[in-house]
Length: 359
Image 1 (cartoon, rainbow, N blue to C red):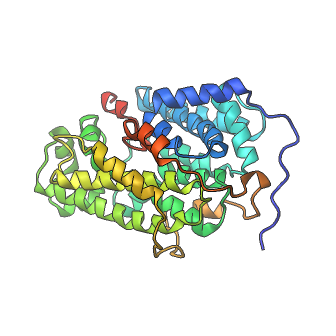
Image 2 (cartoon, rainbow, N blue to C red):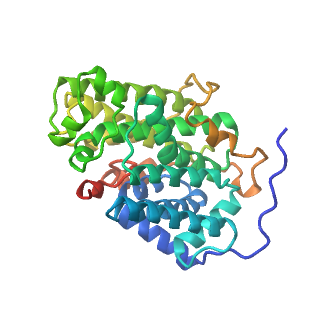
């Protein structure tokens, strides 16, 4: 039996309507992919999602737009201080900070989740490489699994099994990002592929970064990572039925389109250096229509959480959701909404393409 939810804070909200509008504008300008996907969400979820993503976006940009490891580490530390102030109810003077303070209080988001996201950004700041798949999954859990878990809480679901499947989706999407962006990352001096896999394929990481080229060996490593992503997409699918009906199409569409990006990489011969994999408009429309249809039963709902994401799920206290997060009637206007977002949805990225221009 779940304990009752804690009472909502008696104090007035920190964020004013102008702050929410600023968060929405920041997302629309800086992350068209997420903005497009958000249009498929009900309004009750969309506004807090903008606040959450605005802060995540600010955090990502605060690290990526600074040159030099020392200055990037300092930027992460400053973000940690801003996060602490938001949780203390004394947010820094900025729309994203004020909106975040309201979101984490209203939806009982434990501080461990955004703290883990900042830890992942710190790993990026130090240029960390990943020895094997579990190490890479630990990174993906922080920069993407956290976002999946926080979005699930905003949608009013806290059950460990639902959170586990949301984290699966986040990690799968990050694996797809990494596979698609091998070339962009390499040209920026970054490498996310598991080093053990590269060694098994006869690839030297430093030699690859010095002269990034595609060959069959590299393609085999990319194919392995996409196979792992597909396994997690399949498990994540089973958790969508546990979300509120009006939230399911957006989350399912994101997963379907991202999985299709992986198939586009495979269709390019797993060559992620010569060209960027894309999903064409006709295929996107078909996937959006599939997302709108009732989903068939999918196995894997009760599967254990990934070892890399278990700490995120354990950090979430269990209690009944607030009345404000109750299930509402199903929402989906395929003709009016899907066609509007079709030209915008490209990816639901956790890393912006501008990173390729930074050392």
